[in-house]
Image (cartoon, rainbow, N blue to C red; front, top):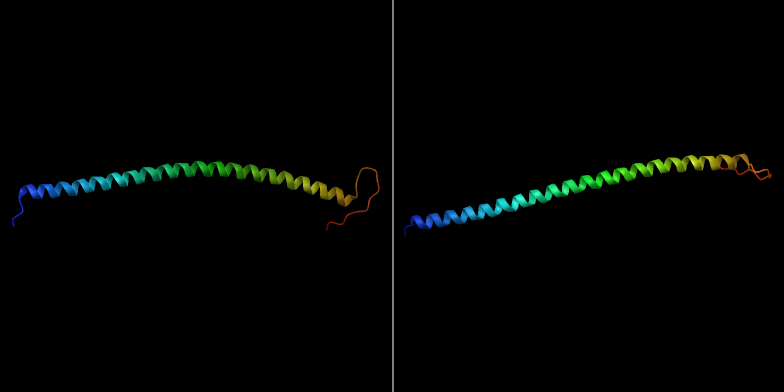
Length: 88
């Protein structure tokens, strides 16, 4: 059987339609990927800011703890005699 011009055109149109659907699906995937990249960057900025705040608070806590340890090594300081605590 000979393939008619109409049949070839129909087959060609089917392939073009399939290709168009594939291109549209790829475009949708790329757009979703870009949205995820943007969202991830925002999340990382938020996390980085929180980490910086935590690091600053940790430094303050360590300084206060060192003052407490030093005062305990001295043995009080409020006028009462206490046993000296050996913290190492």
